[in-house]
Length: 227
Image (tube, rainbow, N blue to C red; front, side, top):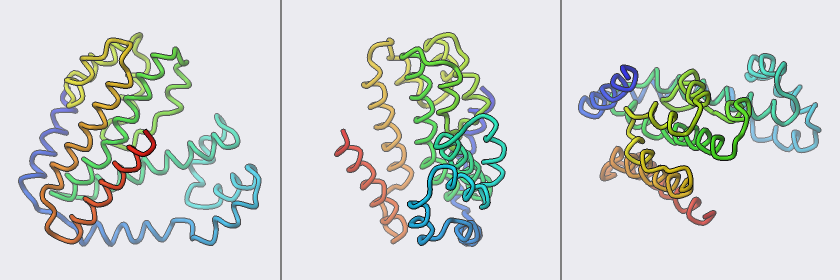
């Protein structure tokens, strides 16, 4: 409960303060970007089998993730989980180093991973997936940390999961879940996410805000086409 209150307070203060460190974060992101696999690498990966790809990735910045997860996963599962874990760490770093308005925007954008994880847990309960299957599909790249998500996955029923989320912005939607209307609940969660994100962006006047808004609208178009 205290965790979510602190998160709310942080978001509120970030919105009002406006003191952002864009230059510093931009410099850090550029440095992080240099660690990404170059474009020409992907044509090489296309000619490798899974074991070769795993070995290749294990020699890059993903080495620690691959080494630690290799005891539990193999093949494509190992690659996927290693990349997802590295992604979660990277996004957490962005939240930690950003301040003010920038922190608020990044935090709101990354909440799509919170919604992904909540959906994953509810789907797991709905389809009677094993606890291991549910946890293996958690990304934990948003505000909800893995330990908390893991505790949610361990709940006996979806009712207990929803009760544990009673202090989040998702609860007014989740409380309407009756165990049979999951697609409707998922759709409402997506709408809430984009509504909050556009509220955070506001009326885009600067070129960067306009670009961000265009990116989000493109994401929505893609989702609608897939639907």
